[in-house]
Image (cartoon, rainbow, N blue to C red; front, side):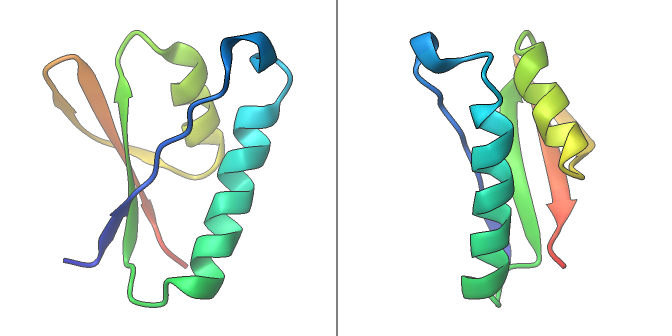
Length: 78
């Protein structure tokens, strides 16, 4: 299909410095330039990981589904 999965993992000692948000935004920008066949970006985040959920929501992702211990977020590619 035309979905692409996105995942970010910041080293524990570097967390809390805004790097997750910066990495996510740069990845979205890069993807928009180089992945013209993608319709949606999908993120699968553990439901206990509130920090990652906040980052993805602030980057325009919407709650799409819940599966087991994960929440699936989806962002329309523009």
